[in-house]
Amino acid sequence: MLFPALRTLSSRIIAGFAVLILGFSAVSALTVLAMERLGTEIRVIRVGYLPLALTTKDLYEKQKSLHQYLRDLEGESSSKRVKIQLGRLRVRRMALLNDAEADARKLRKQKLPPGHEKAIENTMAKIAEYREQAKKLDVHYKVLLQYPPLYRLGPTPGAKPSAKFQAGLDALKAVRKGERELVNRAEFLRVLQRGNIEVTTLRLERNERRLRLYTLYLGLTAVLLGLFITIWVTLTLRPLRRLRDAAQRIAAGDYASRIAEAGPAEVAGLAREFNAMGRAVEERERELVRTERLAAVGKMAAMITHEVRNPLSSIALNTELLEEELHHLPDEREDESLALCRAITREIDRLTAITEEYLQFARLPKPKLQRLDINPIVRGLVEFERGQLVARGVSVDDDLAASLPPVKVDDAQLRQALLNLVRNAADELEQTDSDGTINVSTRATPTHVEIRVADDGPGIPETLLSRVFDPFVSGKKGGTGLGLALTQQIMLEHGGSISVDSEPGKGATFLVSLPRVEPDAAASSTFGRDPGKMDS
Image 1 (cartoon, one colour):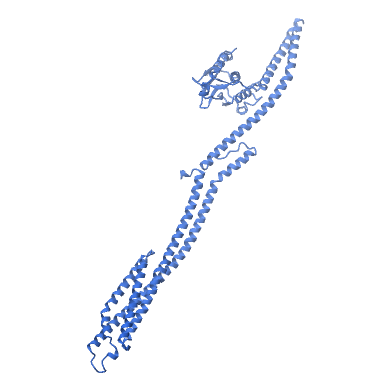
Image 2 (cartoon, rainbow, N blue to C red):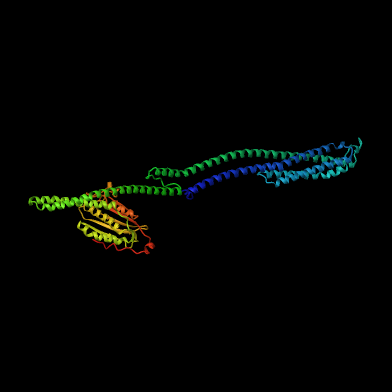
């Protein structure tokens, strides 16, 4: 199997839902991550770029105002006002520059999305250059504020300007040039921040569209994954439907119904137990029908035997009286009449034996079970029958296990059952031209003690093999068909079983199996009498 850990039904279902949970967790995590990136971009705009853009815009406006005032400085009439106005504009510009630098530093400390660090560093560099350029103008501003070149303080037309006026005029020219460059730098900072906002906004819109697509695709993937897991769980649980259908068939009377022992470990195990249950129910139903049939046959046999025995006794008695009367007839008629009477007597004896067999089958007593070793029973039976079997041209031997656990049996009934098997085997062997052999053996299994009665005769025809234990089924001419049925009934009463294995031309083997008694339970009791000492 590709995944040995998924052999069980529970592990497959748990694995399926685990995959489903992991899939939805991954979708949720990716969505949250994408939204976190969007939130970071929005926070960068709100906390960093937007305040920085507003500050640089104000800085640009203030720089333009300062530059414009310097351009119109000659129109001022008061040097005091020049000092105040230039001081106010320069202080405000420096404050805005500090604010811009503070905003840039604050932005740099934020958790920035990829690609923003370079833009922040560039902004910081431009602010530093702006500050450096503004500081270079402090020398010129010092001269300008000391000697402002106002027209009312300037030279008269045609006159040479004073040294102070010329110094202030040179300083004004230098400041105007420097402030014009600072205007350009301030505008560059303003445009740079506006570009950063536009770029970030475009990136935000792109990420928003991407998030929408990701959410759609991931949601669709999660739905497909859930559908796949649902189908997989449904297919995994399909064997349970087969179990249900098979149970319904058995409930309807189809005891031969079986299902494939495949699928997850629990289902396969349940299928095996279900098939075992089906076989047990089928066997029990067959045994129940057989028991009911045997009960009916027993009642019929008892009734027939009761109705036939008394007339047979009367016929036998009258035949004996008739035979005595025939002795007084003339010689030529006596032999013929006596032969007829003897034929009648033989048939009466045969019918009497049949009725006795029927009566024995109908009135089989409950076994009186004792803990016994079956080896002495088998050995005694073999020795008891050996002489008669040899006279019939049949040899018999035994192969008994050295040590057998005890079993609970009725020795008389067990001896009767084994006697039926041995005599049936002898009857089959008499049908062959060559001498035959019967082998009786015993052995122990972990749960039972077995007795095998095997012969090398012609075997049992296939047409009779499945019905060999049914009443009135016999392959022998003149047989009643009750011997094996009686033997099986005895085994069932003992809690055991009997089976047959045969192939035409290769003999037959009957296997008797009796449940063994546990050694500790058997050790606490004594065995019964030795059944090997049998009466002839």
